[in-house]
Image (cartoon, rainbow, N blue to C red; front, side):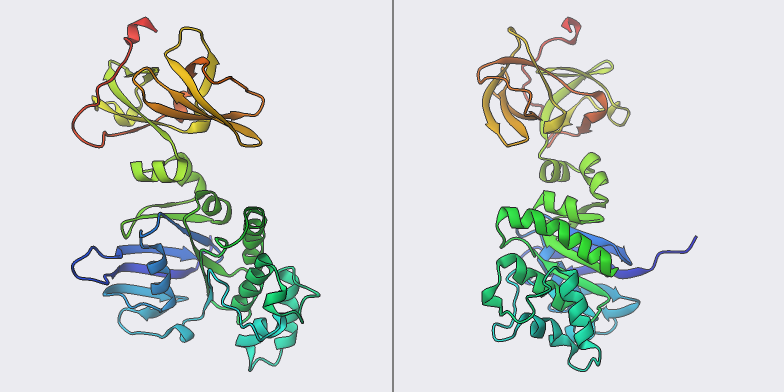
Length: 362
């Protein structure tokens, strides 16, 4: 089996702007293979844009090594941004207002004899054929971002870097363009790293997702791995927006205020903890004497999102198909598939006061 080519390698990279504060990027290591798309996902201030700028060469790391296409660009030696074979797509497009679509795309191809052919191919690829003579102010936001992407792709770099490329677009345009963005990048075969704080965007575009927190990568994996098997509580909370339910172990069961669940193997030696249950995994069943009440209901088009209040006052959230309509104030029992439950240790050693019914009564 042919070994996949590593196009980007980050080894122990650290960047600290102020010695009195924590590093913006702290000892980060990972690699990206040829053709893959990596999403750097995390909240504001987690270090994802700084990491992208380190790869681009706009910032220098205090320690560590960065390698692009087999060439060390930071570490033992320093290579400036323009010599890194990297294409950059900025959040605000950064197009030249006095140049046409074709001229913007061709900007990095001044000495390429086949520049006209390359521009024609790229305008077709990004869906701008026929708009070559227009200026940026004559284009929509989505069209301007396509120009910016085509311009970055034109010199055929080893790597494309995108800094929140869709955040300035309207919702509908953003949803459509994120599908097109993945198709365009895959069609070129060029690897890419993009920054986003939007969980759905990262999961939809990326082959691999790196969830960042406080300058470190909490988890790196496929979208499916990160969503279904979060390794830390932070990843579970940020990516899946899951419910966390305090629980204590009674024999082979986890006892919670909404019912009892089987103890999973990885948590069999624990006495207390939290059960993570994703919103879509909660099953609502009307029951007149159940302790959980529907507090609010929101219609989201293809589904409803319910806010549920337990007898202790805790709020849980559930998503159901649009066919399941339960009025506010309805009492419901909650069920969940065993394989959908994950266990996490408690945030601190002090156990929550649980308002729970005995498992023996279930």
